[in-house]
Image (cartoon, rainbow, N blue to C red; front, side):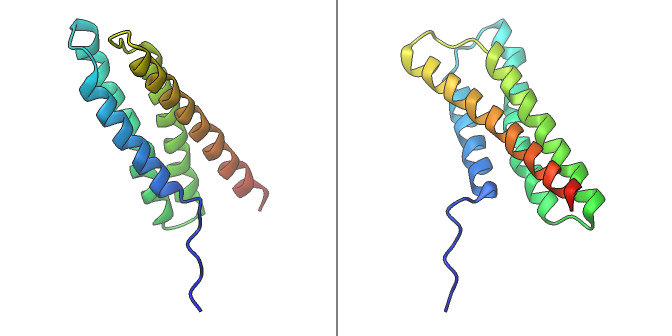
Length: 121
């Protein structure tokens, strides 16, 4: 009998986050400030997922922990750039910005919990 796929798939969740960040950035107004912030947000927003995939393919516990720390650092950075980026001021864009920032902060908590669990073992 095949096992049911987990409902909670962090690789998928981080990939969806990266897609949402990408789509959000495409809708942001083009101005001097966002010209600097958007590339930073795109990099930081896609990095947790890519690094989590690398962590799952790590060559040992030390490598895994280091990659999870990178995931956490990049999630913090994504939250930072989401705080600074300028939207068009509409309710929809402000709502998406807040939701993305909340998701980035949740990733920080998740990656911190993974590290704590690894240190207890």
